Image (cartoon, rainbow, N blue to C red; front, side, top):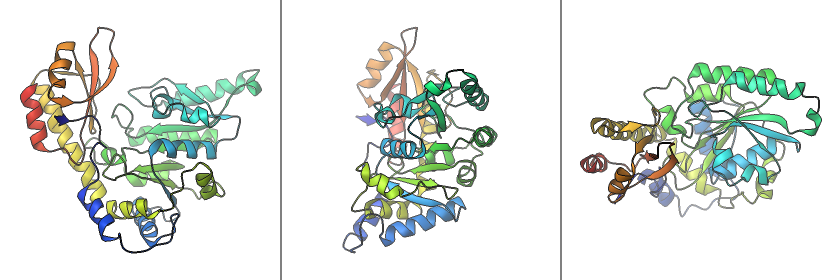
Length: 341
């Protein structure tokens, strides 16, 4: 059975596993104070060109989102996200469980509009009873978005300027950041993200690691006693080396970029195969997630040979289906899929 369900269905990139194996018998202190974690932090700071960045590692994306948002917000504040944002639709109410509301705005191919953020905050404070409402306290975006789309540098800059004008921290979810950075259609670099956001994370789980996300505070703005906050949430790994070793490997000799570059190459082959066979797309994605529209007959036929993710049902009865590529996707996989389309 061909596998296109997601980009984290395989274990880890062989070079990441090799690094874990090679360091296995080297004893280290716990809780992220090990030398591998320090090496990874130094490499990430250099890659971001942000020498003052404060970095820590967590196990997964939902965990990271909840801890960051809960730590940055006051008890009466919520987080602005587009309605399709991962924190709004696919995290089982993790943000609300921490006592904060997701303030959902319309999406534009998965992206937030800066002017709509400004208007929302302006209208909030013009409301006579605003003291009885959830205050907007920060802005959440993801890059790539849930639809595999990307913010341009101009769009990201405009959103960053609005956030600074409104004094709202801008937080970027980078669960699939490797695929955004390596897209042929992007003009946004890792350095741009470090400059334009207040905090972001570099995804490992969906980009070649067994698990792990690298959380980067870019403006010396890590909340006080953040390690204690992580531990209070049950998210502090005693064997912090697990994430440190992996990110040390991912940021050695351009491995993170190559993982993203490979998945993009495979996604282009996959996209070309669907186009050649006359299939329609829900929207144009320049990253490793491709959203194809299938009728019931196509769903059944392809599903006998390949695994995919059902995304949403369209009014005309057809279904939007996601096909994702990763470091483990091969040209042979794409050729086999093309043969059954």
